[in-house]
Structure formats: structure tokens, C-alpha cells
Length: 284
Length: 278
Image (tube, rainbow over all chains, first blue to last red; front, top):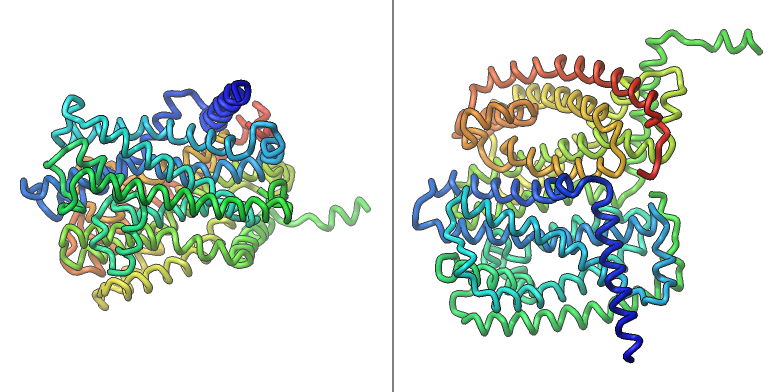
């Protein structure tokens, strides 16, 4: 065990490094960061303009602007972790033809996938920080690094990352079954956008869909991010729940996502091996 | 055999038009062979528009704003097509070896790009129509009937200008490898913002809106909204916006031609036409 653990850690670190290299070695780091933040900043600006057109920047509506900006900022984790990760795995198979080698490596395929996903989440962190900085200075949100409830924020983000990684790995294994599924990670991220409470409260959704959205860990994660950063100055999706109750719901939803993801992963993995999806020619 | 080869030579103009037809054909036919992509092409703008509609619902906005979003969602399909299937296309073509075949054939890049544009316009217009009808029914958006014909005219002009811009971008993308993917991604949301896809362009103010008018979608979409959605805040009167879009068509076409010549000669010199895996 004493020997196995470091090996696994080394393998995990190698997978993270590989993910970062594949994502970023096409350009200089500064250009990569610029491209990575353009999207979330633009989305934040779109929402800020929509907000100002309707509310005329009324003081009473400021908590809703904070709701929109923090939701958009943290959404980068889903965009990178789900959409870009799924695209990356499909590229590994269809374009670079390396997926079969990583599958055969002694590291263990799930650990490789977790490493790749971790690198995506790490690269999203830069855009989260930049969108929050833009929100603070350009949109005058009262965000102060000294007033953030870091333990709550870190606990919420760790749980959310576990569920995002579980979901992304399962999704990419499902997508391996298709020959032309490139782009479906993006669509799935868009669907999650609707169910997550990132840019509107899930209560706006029609009843049964709102109920389904409440099963997902994402609304609880984003709620805790908003509360930990802006406390009482942000619109709350679950005003009747305390921080601890929202955290408990996040824990339960994360556990559910991981268990369901594991079951589906095992099934899709067996199917992929049986039907030769791991090295299928995908006509990239 | 030499005689036969000489007889087979066609006038340049005929080759040009045959190229357009040949390149448009797979765009129309192949797009419908992969049924899952039909869903993808329509679902992406619809889901994006739905998210923005729900934001307006959350803000208790007047219903006319839902019309802005639906029309923006339909136009988004074209901008995505211009970015991914025009601008970045030569980059994919270089990767799969088709670009070098274009270069050694007796045709021009303009013919190939025009074919792509015409084929894309046809297929994406069908999809945008579905998005528009579905979105309007779903969100209860109504339009001014009297503005329909002028709006169709503005729409066709906007498409022409947009795809000429796509040809210009295609020449610029000729040098990009993997960067083309990220560049397309990076151009997506900023243009969605600047062109006022989900809100009236008027809200951007004179300077930002004026700069954003370089993208034909900004002025075209605003003019169509003025014609079809009553109460749209006026950025510039629709007639002037239409005139400006009409001017953009030849400007972008000429710029695309000049840029293609320059980039092609540079790419030949630097060996970029056959480079792969970068």
C-alpha cells in the first residue's frame, strides 16, 4: 500500500500535467488565459446589460445583479469541467488516437480521467477570479476578499468538484458510444445551465423541472458560493434554509451523483470494451 | 490524350460556378445525413435562448424582451455557422488534407468559400426558421405583420454581409492550427454581447454600439427588431442600418479577396498549406 499510493499520486499528477499541456500548449500562457476569460466575462456583461435594461440599476435590484455575476463566474467550472473535458476525451480518441494507450497504462483509467478533469477545473479558476474582479470594479459589487467565508466556500467547491468530475467522466464514457458526438458536452453544459440556478432561480422553472433541478448538487453549490462571498447582500434561492441545511443538501446530492455516476460508468465501461469504443475510428 | 485534355479545359467563370455548386452540395446534403447534428444545431441556440428568456422572467421583464431573445437565438445559428463552418473551415480542411487539393485544383478559394456560404445559408436558414417558430410559439412572441417583407430583405442583406465577413475570417484563420478552435470559441460570446443578441443594441451606448456595428449582425438584427417588434428602442433608424449593412457586403467581399490572396501567398511561402498536427 505504501508503494501503491505514491505511484497513484505520481500517475494522477502526470494526468493533470497532460491535461494542462493538451489544453494550453497551442499558445503562450497569456493568450490562453485571455481566450479562457473572454467567454465568462462576455456572458457576465450580457447579463449585466439585460439586468440594467430592465431594472435601470435600481438599488433594490442590486442583490439580483450579484446573483447573476457570481453564478456566471462559478459557471466556468462547469463549462471547463463538463464541456471541455468531454471534448478533450473525444479528441484523445478520435483526433490524437491516444485514449487506448491511457486505458492500457498501469495507472488505471478512472484515475487518468480524474486527473484530466482536475486540470480543466484548475484552468477555470483563473476565469472565476477575473469575472469576480470585473464584477467588483466594473459593476461595483461589494465583494471583499477579507469578508469571504472561506471554509464554507472551500467546502462547497470541493463537494461540487467531486460531483462535476463524477458527472463529466460518466458523460464522456457515454459519449464514447457515438461516432460523431463531438459538441454534445457543450449541449449538456447548456442543459445544466438551465437546471443549476446559475443565472436565474430554479423556482422560475416549471414545477416538475424545478423539482428535478432541486435534486442536482449545482443549485446548492452556487447558493453557498453566493452566501459565502456576499452574505446577506445577494438574492437567495433558498431563503428558508440555513447555510448548514444547504450544505447538507449539497452533501446528499453529491453522494447521489457519485453513486449514480459510478454505476453508469461501470456499465458504459464494460460496454465500451465489449463493443470496441475505446479505439473506435471516429472520423475526426 | 493531350488533345482530350485541352478540350476538357473550361472557361474560368464556368469553373468558378461549378466550384460553388460542388462545394455547396455537401453542405446541403451532408448536413442532413447526420441526424444527430440536426438536433445539435437547433438545440444549442434554443437552449441558450431559453436560459436568457428565464433570466428575463426572473427580472419580471415585459414580454417584448422575449422577442429580442427569440430573434437573437435564430441569428445565433448563423453566427455559429460563420465561425465554425466558414472561418475555421480551412483550418479543419488543412488537418484532413483537403486544403492542398483546393490549392492544386484549377479553381479559386473564393469559389470554394462562396459554395460553403450558399450551402450553409440554405441549411441554417431552415434551422433558424424552426428556432424562430418554436421560440415564438413557446414564449408567446408576436410580430408586426407589416414589417415582415422589409425584415426579410434586411435579413438577406445581413446574411450576405455576415458570410462575406466569414470569408474574410477564413483567410485570417488559414494560419491557425489548434488555435482556430480556441479563437472561434473566444469570438463566440463577445460577439453575442456586442451584437446585442439578447437585448436592444441601444443599451450599449453610441460608442460601444458603433464599434460593434462592424459585425453586420449588430445592425441587421436591430433593424429587423425595429421592423418586427413594436417598441424596440432605436439605436439608429432601420433605414440607415439597412444601408450600412448593404455597404458592408462589397466592403467585406473585397477585403476577403485581398486577404485571401495575401494569406495564400504567405501560406505557400511558409509551407503552411500542408502543415498538420500543430
